[in-house]
Length: 158
Image (cartoon, rainbow, N blue to C red; front, side, top):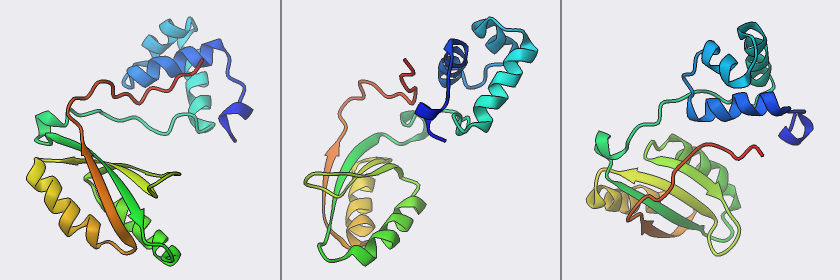
């Protein structure tokens, strides 16, 4: 079922908005935000999970504080005629922990990756010895993040 096919009212949106920022919110806290009894709020919360609107809950770590000081965006171009390599490439990408996000895109590149690394030397090693040796990869271009301006997982629900 797709989001536009699911009927969300103002209360559902309040619950979802609050959970996006406060994933550890108690049912009592959610019920106050939604202006519902705890039992009604619990039923709504479970329904939102069962409908697949909530994929899970996670702690967002500070990359720098855990020793990952470099964020880079990598543009990957696949060799033409290597369509058979795409599933293998995607499987390998899924297994690499330093790749936080991977998108198949339109335009001059085939994929955009968001990668974290301990430092520039680690990033270089990853690019030269891992990514460039993956099946079907013909070129990579990287942009190193100088300053993070905004980073959120919260979706606009309105």
